[in-house]
Image (cartoon, rainbow, N blue to C red; front, side, top):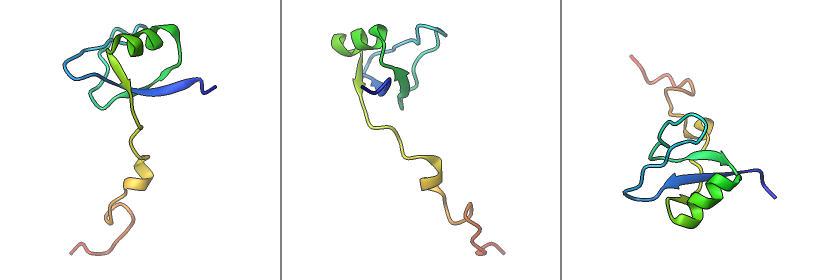
Length: 70
């Protein structure tokens, strides 16, 4: 079983990290597959989601060294 999962807050919900007290960002976060987060899933406070693509996959031409600049 995977030890982490990626979740996003449900629309209209604010969910705080139990360790830091900081609100979860709207784009979601990877969290441990722990009782707290499993309860949030069951309660409908968060939903499992697909994590965003890694930054390397989203590089622009400028970041990859394209010489289109003047």
